[in-house]
Image (cartoon, rainbow, N blue to C red):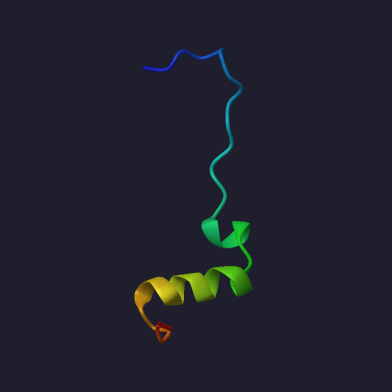
Length: 40
């Protein structure tokens, strides 16, 4: 149980999509999903 007064109230976490640009987030997620060819 948290005691109020020790820390200021934090706002709701921002949407992950708004925190990252589409250019940097999209290739990373595609690589994890295995959609891009692997280079060995």
